[in-house]
Amino acid sequence: MESISEAPAILPRAAASAVRAALRAAPVVVVLGARQTGKTTLVRSLPQLATRTYLTLDDFDLRTQASTDPEAVVARAPTMVIDEVQRARDLLIAVKRSVDRDRPRRPGRFVLTGSANLLMMRRIGETLAGRASYVTLWPFTRRERLGLGHTGIWSELLAADFSRWPQVVEASGAAYDAAAGGARNTHAQDWRTAARLGGFPVPAYELTDQDARARWFSGYVQTYLERDLQTLRAVENLADFRRLMRAACLRIGGLLNQTELGRDVGISQPQVHRFLNLMETSYQAIRLPAYSVNRTKRLIKAPKLYWCDTALALHLAAETEPRGAHLENLVLTDLLAWRDTLATRPEVLYWRTAAGQEVDFVIETASRTLPIEVKAATRLSAADARGLESFLQEYPRTSNGALLLYAGSEIFPLTTRVLAVPWWRIC
Image (cartoon, rainbow, N blue to C red; front, side):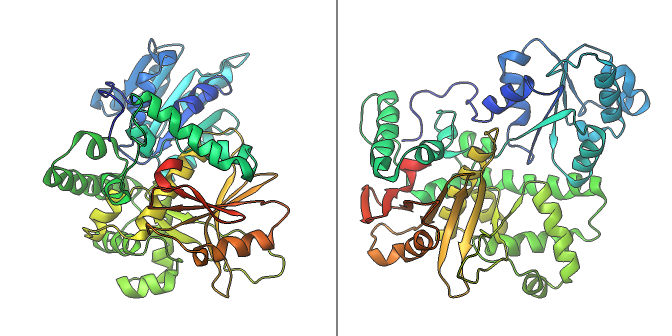
């Protein structure tokens, strides 16, 4: 089932709560994320911002004024939303001056949105230091796309003892089933379908024709290459950059070896490093760090490579059939969207030893770790929990249980300390 009922005009987003909190905390709220994740729709849909002056720098006349007289733009209203703020170089300085003249500083005066890039991040960091609060908007989580407006139940699992996890999962499913009219397991979904849909609002929700979706992704990539990267003036050869994007998408879920990646694509390792920095800062590529607390085992420290959206990754790699790594990617993007709604953000990492023991994801908070393994199989055996059991043995003080997400339908203890759960019951 793809929706609880007829979809609302605007699907609620989990990040809305983070924006509301930021409006109470800082004079400038900056909403960042990849292009086409719904940043403008999010800020324009919030009741707190409904009466504000809304300006977009996609408007040529406004962009011209912002370049020649940014102070006049900022003076248009006491509070405002400015969209695509990265398109006017001096506007951030005018915002800073306006904030500094305001005594006492009023929280939430300016809301800025823009597709993140290195240039924009550097300007904001230097210009608005101590004045801005940041919110990241990732592509739709699965539950957002279904109209639920939130991410997976990671907070609930972290708050509960391992012995109560089955009840936590069942309670979450019952709440969804009730919203769907009482039918059981109405939120079940094949992971391959979810991977093909991805999370960008237009292709994930509005486009049902495969050709139309392919054209949308082609246009997305072209705009990213020709507009965003040219704004940065940081890519001399777009063909090299595009080949690296494809190679990265073919390697999602794997350890990142920049030298090997460069050799396969035909570019130097320093260029690979610079291009990956661009991809990551513009919220395309994701480099997942390793869990670094080392006691008795030698750990692998290289990051793992993922992509912001599984459907885009499939398009870039010219793959028609999702792989198990795409299910991992679905879980990871849900984890990141959840993490970035929190005031105190936990770490999301992976764990791997030189001997080959591995855990796909580790959520690390100040007091607890939650190891998570992801399997695309519909049937499991105790051998599938070896990496999780090894992690639990290595870090007994912070972990009392582990989660194995898989493509089946039953919730059951795989071992005494590992609970097997269908992936769609968590995400």
